[in-house]
Image (cartoon, rainbow, N blue to C red; front, side, top):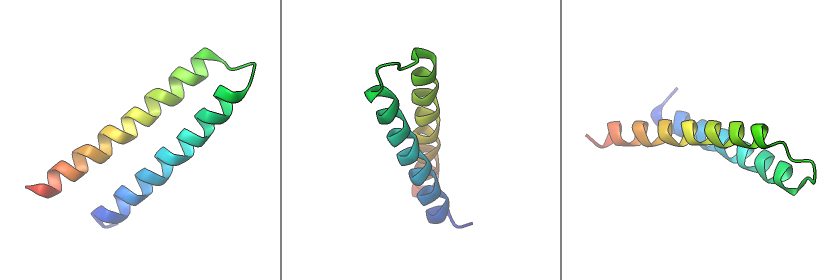
Length: 58
């Protein structure tokens, strides 16, 4: 997998998690632990994308 394809894959996963998070937040029975888990997963993916992008700049 190329670097760009890997980044695109991560961006897709990040977007899917964002959509899932928004759906949960819109629900009156939103589970705080699930929300926190989704936010952590999104942050890990974002950090991974930033590390990949930074490593390709050098």
